[in-house]
Image 1 (cartoon, rainbow, N blue to C red):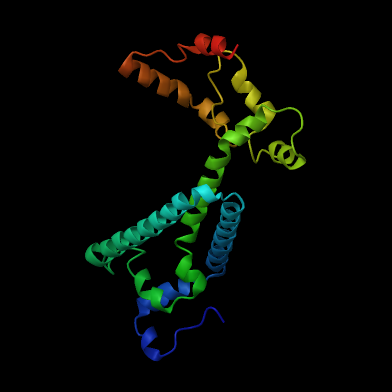
Image 2 (image 1 turned 90 degrees about the vertical axis):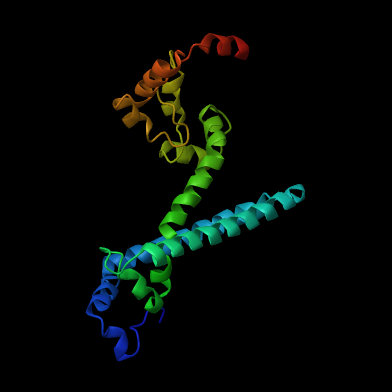
Length: 220
């Protein structure tokens, strides 16, 4: 079994450790842990496949540097976190104070569940940022799109063509999000872009979209 009750009576001597340890065995928590782990490793596999599929030999050196930099960054962040926990942490801290004592008796999912959700966030962020320009291009393409792209657009997984059309209605001052478009409506309701434009204009004196006509002439 991947998860087993700690052996030896001494591991259960501390009532608080036992309480926190048992907390991680709640059905909902365990489900969340495994979903996070499986999703994370699926995204890692997806990303690794794409890296290999699109790898070009002339980029080998930059890939090696990127991998090395990533490993070094991860090692430094692990040291920073470990230093913070060991130096400034305390078992008296609410919620997280006792958790570190459970780490050494935890199973595979429990050992990884804290980092996997963050890694899922990072991988999704990387994938969607990488694809943003292509998604934007697809939102301007009305012929010859693959069926799977149209399917993703129709289900609003990526920016739909009809949705993006709203941005291109003069004066082009709304619906700026071009990856999924999910945030366009709520940001418009709270007048987010207008408020940001007013702040920038107040600070710099620059008027928003002052060169729109220049861009229109340039495109023509």
